[in-house]
Image (cartoon, rainbow, N blue to C red; front, side, top):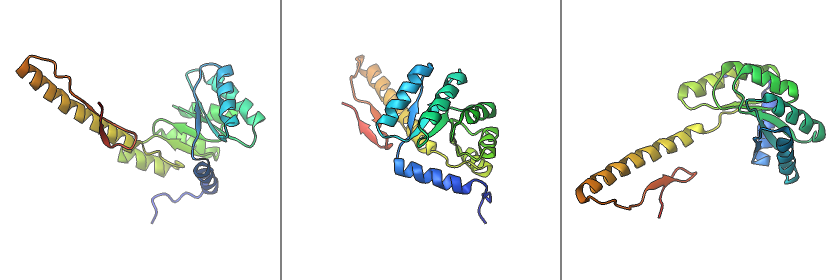
Length: 194
């Protein structure tokens, strides 16, 4: 038996995910002013991107204006809101015309607000509990934040190891050993900086 038995909005979710697979990218526009946000979004659309995410900053009014104007001027594009922190932000973004909602965390009320408007909601989730809660609440998709978090933890562990080595060597020699340190590239593999 599947964990999520919901069928409401499933077709629109499938269609949205298919568009995302075809587009392969969502342009993220983050700006404190309406004019700059509008210009940046128009540049992304002129470059061929059809999925645009407008970041919902502290001043949601600017983002709402940008979403409303882009929806009016580019009906073939899919315009959504990102960095949504609460259900009230989600409702305001949807009222402005947002066609999808991204949230940096798993907030069940935010997911419910998007689902009640039948638009895709993509919350951030890291732990197995958050991932399961988002899934059961009807999240359209859950970004692979866990992979990024594992890479971040690995970097911290590697850096701690290096600092321990550096400290021991500095104490023994009394000098600053100008060695190399390890970082991660986007794939999460370790590589050596020179």
